[in-house]
Length: 339
Image (cartoon, rainbow, N blue to C red; front, side, top):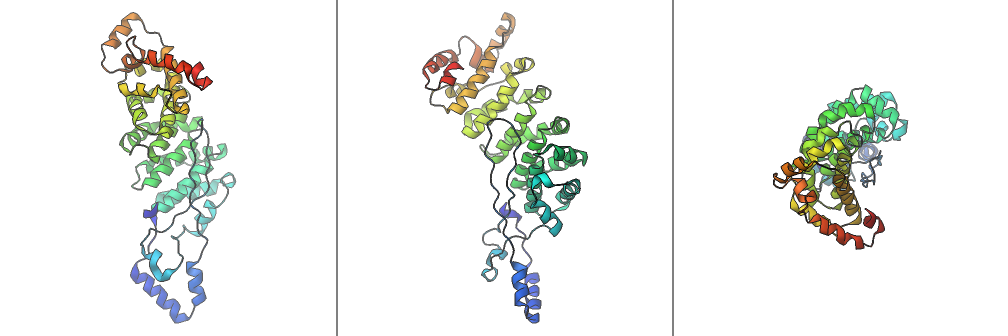
């Protein structure tokens, strides 16, 4: 978010200081540059189940080496949004009213400062933790506005857009609009650096969108992407990836697409007692859903002809999965033993 600092031009700064000095208004100079510093945004830890998240209000410090960081050694932070918007972003999210949300959405579309856009999205996302605000943002046609920032040049703006959509997605009516952006969300997962906040935010959104079977079909082409991410990501992303896979595999109508998807053989490496219990338990739940599927002999024979498909990697009688499952019967975690 550091690239969002507002830096006055050198000429304007000199002119301003000259005017103030000529007037002898040293106190005015102090008031001009003093102000309450925004607190740094606190990241939201991943939850065990999809849910509404609300975070503290955050702010932006000037980029090290910038003009504002150097001038006269003054303790200066980046310029705030205008007074009305500044007042709104410091209010409690559950106290925002319709006209507040309308103003935030308006500022979001007109602001040229990525730091301000990020702050407005953070405030809208926190507000979207409450059902009344979820409905009002939709009625104000705010979902397309927020989703439009998934392609914003600023990384933190894209992250905050995903977080806001994630909370809005807890509303069934909102899902009807948010589902239109699934291809773009999947592209963010594929194109973003592994283990990035962008990938995590995108997976959280897909988790909430796939809780029910209504929109799961939109993800049937993404199983290979999710399985590939599973074997290269850290524990935090593995848990979130498996939440999506467990949701999808709970739907019998999705199983044909899942078992035909290409799967890296290395996914079996995770079926091991050294794997994090949080990851292993969800992986075994996914495997259990797969094993509950019973293909006909003809379908099974056809799947065996598909090289590297998930059926051959995990379900075929030649798979190494079976021996690995037996070894887990001695796992110290009883829940893992049972699964």
